[in-house]
Image 1: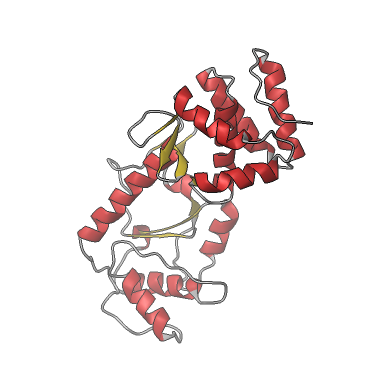
Image 2: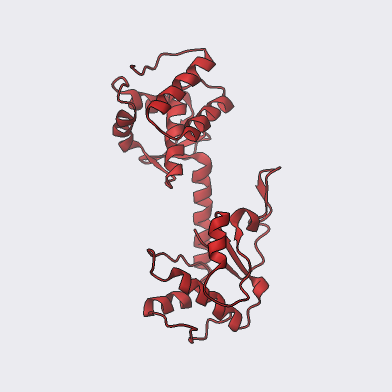
Length: 262
């Protein structure tokens, strides 16, 4: 079956054609449904809008917030081997003409910055996050209770000791490492030293993206007084009825030590 770009006014047939394309490529159904919903929201039967929204959602699903334009020609050719020549490139070009794909200062749902296309709301969130991180960095360190101590409850490597000290002095610390490198040991020691140094249990918050991850976080090696870990949605007070969070820039968390397992 040859993929074409013929215009149509039959919304149901157009949507089913895209679902069939996506199914033949054996891609996650939620991505194409999200892309079709975006087309519905803009009242557009636009192949370009659907394709690029679906590709962005596919990349988001894989953990990437950007979709590199230069790689999409080969990618689309692999996903849709029966597409006519120039299928993906034509749809991208259509985006600029149709107005759903804009530059950084535009107001469209998809935004092109350099060689990458982003969902506008994701790019905005990343930009605001970057500003917030930079503001924390510029504010300098702020030692927490336990930062002055150096006695650990268990043997630590030099790297682990440095990580514990950094977590207790920096306003923001990103702790990374492969399985078995001692991340949980470090986090448990951070909480233990915070409490041993005079910090209150209610000033500690543990959170993770999912309930299962939160359960694992609650089992950190450390003091028995560890608070119960929560999902990020619970921590931030998500209100599904309004699709908003209670916690935000104007209503920050009250805790002094927040551990998030991502």
